Amino acid sequence: MTVRTRFAPSPTGYMHIGGMRTALFNWLFAKKHGGQFILRIDDTDQERNIESALNPILQAFRWLGLNWDEGPETNGPCAPYFQSQRLHLYRAAADRLLAEGKAYRCFDTPEQIQADRTAAEKEGRQYLNIRRSCELSPSQIEENLAAGKPWVLRFLVPREQKIELEDAIRGHVEWDAGLMSDPVIMRANGMPLYNFATVVDDGAMQISHVIRAEEHLPNTAIQILLHQALGNTLPIFAHIPYVAAPGSKEKLAKRKLDKYRNNPQFKILFDFADKVFPRIGLAQQGGLDPVMVEYYEKIGFIPAGVLNALARLGWSLDDSTELMSLPFLIENFSLERVVKAPAGFDPEKLLSYQAHWMYQLPIAERVAGCLPYLQKAGFVSAELSLAEQQYVAAVVAALNERIKLFSDVLTFDFFFKDEFAANEKDFAKIFSKAGTKELLLAFRPVLDAVTEWTAANLEAVTRAFCDSQGVGQGTLNQPLRICATGSPIGPGVFECLVLIGRDKTIARIDAALVKLASGS
RNA sequence: GGCCCCAUCGUCUAGAGGCCUAGGACAUCGGAUUUUCAUUCCGGUAACACGGGUUCAAAUCCCGUUGGGGUCACCA
Image (cartoon, rainbow, N blue to C red; front, side, top):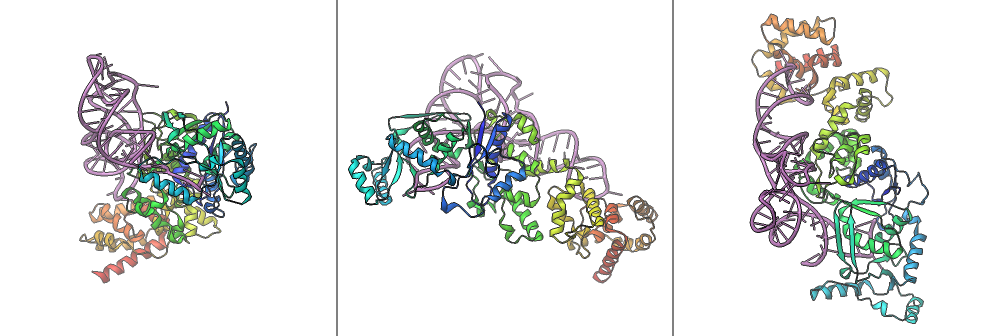
């Protein structure tokens, strides 16, 4: 059997990070078994269909490097892959069910249905369709149709049946069809409903494994019935746990975003957004938030980090393997090792995977990743000169593991800005020590006399000076750093001085000395 | 509320009856290296929801309780 999996997003304008995890599992399973991964667009609900809402979804797949074998743009043997272009298939299947008496035209108005529901609730019994329309004679139906009375097509649930499922992850699950109401499969406007379109397409596209989040488990009962009615071979179902909000068991949902802002684990991601997006010209965070895959791309994560974190959400290889590349995942992924309980999304763990994979990235790629941030922030020109290119490369190399996200380069803006203000608190703290100001003052001419402006020489000069003054080197290094960079953190102080350059360094120290003279 | 699912450190997880004095990772707390920061290295704190069974033996099997969650549309 050829393994064929699919992911069927609705074009909502963004790619949900939890949905991405589901897509990843589908993709990995298909790749692992040499099968195909299909992208199918569920765009049957016109109201939910936003113009150009598909692109962010495709972009998320492209960014992470998850290619689809069949789907939009690539097409394939089961084209088209947009459900809105497959209506004839749903209608044909619906006609068949109607002709075979497995579905019926329901003329009940929505108000009537609602009244039935309310009545059932009042009496404390489970609501089931009253199936009035099934009592209609053929001539009465003809009359209704001729009169243009609106109707929907409902699937006639075989109520005497028990539905059994052997889920690849959950094991045996069963339902009593006698408790299920007849689902609408075609709308009044002739559009199919999700459960029906899904079954028709999964059948037509010969999907072998339906891997999806567990919130679809209740749908599965109906879908199994529908598959049976249509005479389809049942796919294997695998219901993976949903992705929960950090530190909770609740499904991660975009509409709960406001609540997440106060979530301590989630906070770091919102903080990144607040810090970075305004600096790269994205007002209102560019409409991006940590529920969306786009957020991670725009804030400067790399695919390997995100992929590793996603893979470990509800899945593990063994008792110790944490760091996994995409090729490694393909080789080792299995449904058997998917856990059953919901997995809380953990931004901190994501960050640790990110840090690891970022450091694996060749320096040239790290530079390439950082550049757009510097350009958008206006620190380097859009048309990069060779000198700029080399300077950025030198800075990124010096920053080394201090860059975890590409956008982290903006934290070290003192390498790029002419003007900066030292952090008052750090500045005051460093110069609060008696003699520090005087030491720097005495060092100023020594620095001026330095001819060879290299890290090694600067260190040697500084060391000699400190020895002559009878103080430890650290006593001078920190004042030097805060004056030259404005920040108490960063690469080695001499590396910083070299990158900043002689003129700027001396100018900055002079500015600090003026400030100290007037201040205290 | 009906139906369904789930339950091991704060978090992600290992654990298929004896290898469990419950392992790893992230976070956290020390300590060493780095005269900043980050990295790296060592070490510590920290969990089987509860109650009954079954068994010589249960985190692991069964039942119940509690708790959490999903889903109940002419959304997907």
